[in-house]
Image 1 (cartoon, one colour):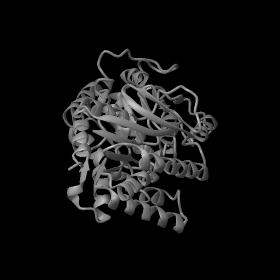
Image 2 (cartoon, rainbow, N blue to C red; image 1 turned 60 degrees about the vertical axis):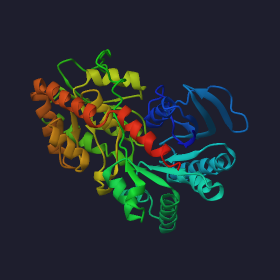
Image 3 (cartoon, helix red, strand yellow; image 1 turned 45 degrees about the vertical axis):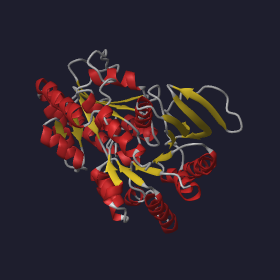
Length: 405
């Protein structure tokens, strides 16, 4: 079976961003299917193609995946207007492929929400089976965050969301809240499946060589955040905790932020201004290097801004990376992940927007470092039991290919 797969922010493991689409494509190949991946050029991502762009695109085969990459550079640091323009351009270019390419199933994954547009055209103009994967609830998230306030823009996004859901023969939600959000738009529950992000257990194997960021002693508690430094992540809360730890004289606790994003420079300036020498910023690293870093860390930080839509409506890659690596997790907002951490006793679940509680949890971890390895073992047991990427990918493949009658 030939699968046409649209993911604007696709990357192979050589990049420093999530690789869900790469893993799903590999699983399709393992089951004997063919995959054409259509993507753009994403900051931190690596498609594996290196030839020159010709008329705005380049093609090639990487690890068995046929890739069509548009020359559309995108970064989380870009402004709203530029990002919106790139999203729409990618969608329009993708329509042409959806209407001309040979395939049996068209699959689109967010973000952005505009990823559903080529699938809509494929469904209604070519009668192709369309499967739509939802990674975040739009426009609910940007509306609650206050990122988008224009009522016309919000209305247009709501209409596109509805049209994408109702055009798809099947939908996939990455979290319980996302599945409920799709149902609320009138989609029959029988057409929705939950397939959360999974754990790359082979990447985070026990034989990786651990390393620590310069300036952190072996006796220090090293808590790492790996991911985007943007509005959604609420990293000022972590700096507030760092400030509280400094007041308490806890020089043995270090917070390491690995990644990039629109607010990284602002956060760095704040840390410098407040002389937060317990905070270290590090450039993004690829998955193999990330596995080594996590092997040398003591605690993973699962942080988001205090937005109710996040509680059950996200499936963060970093959380699954942490538990894959056997890292205890400190989570700073309620919801399904906090519940798992409590139920499995594999970390700390604290209330949001509370620097004191954040600092208390870090101090507890530092004062009881001997207990952290056991927490980590329970985290990894959770990863193996419920979130093995291979098992989830097989479920995903069955659902996507099963749309063909």
